[in-house]
Amino acid sequence: MEKAIRARCRATGRWLTDRAAWCLAGSLALYALTALTHPAEPLDLRVYREIAPHVLTGDLYDRVVRTGPPIPELPFTYPPFAALVLLPLSHLSWTAAVVLWRAASLAALPVITAGALRLLSSRPAGRVRQRALLWAAAGPWLEPVRHTLDQGQINLLLGAAVLWGLALHRGVAGRGAVGRGAAVGLAASLKLTPAVAGLYLLATRQWRAAVWSVVTGGATVALAWCVAPRESARYWSGLVTDTRRVGPVWTVRNQSLRGALTRLAGPDVTASALWWAALALVTLAAVAALRGAVRRDDRLGVLVTVELYGLLVCPVSWSHHWIWCLPAMIWLAHGPHRHRPLSRAVLALWALVTVTRLVPRLTGIEDRLAHPLPYPAPLAWPGCVYVLCAVLTFLALAPAARRPEHPGVAPARRPPVRSGTSLPS
Image (tube, rainbow, N blue to C red; front, side, top):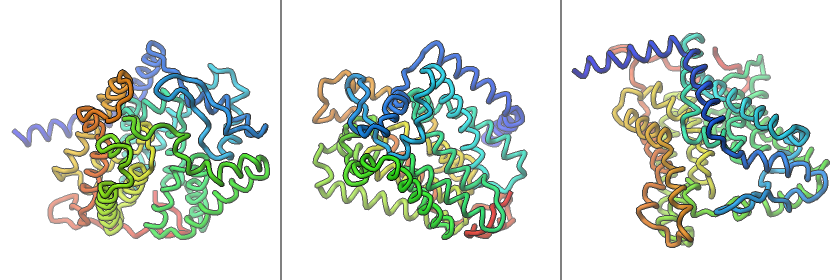
């Protein structure tokens, strides 16, 4: 019976993969229909479009977009360089800006999925392309991706930039290292959270790429300082560490480790032993996952580990920041440990909580509470769901031995990627 089920699942998977382009077209058409019938106001895009021009007038970080509870004001929280890059949005009509931004974000999905599969797979390019399109078709129905699209967030574009640089960039001689490092540095210059991808470069010993990421980031800071010295001084001297401008830590929208523990134990949790114990355990799990991925030359495993760890330890990680669940699910479905029961269970859990949009449902309940402190336990525990998924992903990543593709056949060991070399096809 079990063999028959597996055979049926494999046959269904092959059927869908062979029709991946049609699946993506149908998914995008359905998304467009739902976006028209149930429109969402892209508040973050409003911030980019309305506040970014103030980088030239000296009051970039004093302006806010008025919204409503529970976060009545949205300020600009990115580095000044991001405001310079976003300036063209202010010259577009609102409708044009929304359409173009969402179209670009949707176009970023195949880049993300193809990049993840290229980091993982040595299969022929055609097979990778079909799987990439199929995963891209699933993307709009995962909560972090859908939330990013609804809010007009920049996350998908930054994720595509990072994965394009790390996996899809073509270069000869030393230019590959330049492209990989520059992609990470540029993404981190627009929003600080992608800087965690620098750990990937270090873990995979891509020293030249790591240097180029720092050089690129420094160049963007210097450029912004020349254009907007006052705003640059304000941001880098204090605002960069001011989490109060981002939003309340305790809300279930915040799926970081600190957010989860704040809801469970109260606002003073970071001064308690519980915080340090939880942080230590999460770090140990991430180190074990990173060690296992490095030992088996699993580049996607390394990237998924550092990205999820960055989301966990960041003070505020809104649910839409968790677009890295998509590469994580790709690893769980196609990675070297895909046949292990834990990998299958974690993949099913990621699919369940993202497709059912659990966090927005909890958010709706939270918004009906007057001031949920102390936070109600029945809401706090399910509000830890992304933290749980990330830690379980670490455990699935941790075993170092690669499972053979065929019984009795040892897997070929892929040489590590070194700085100054181009990536294989």
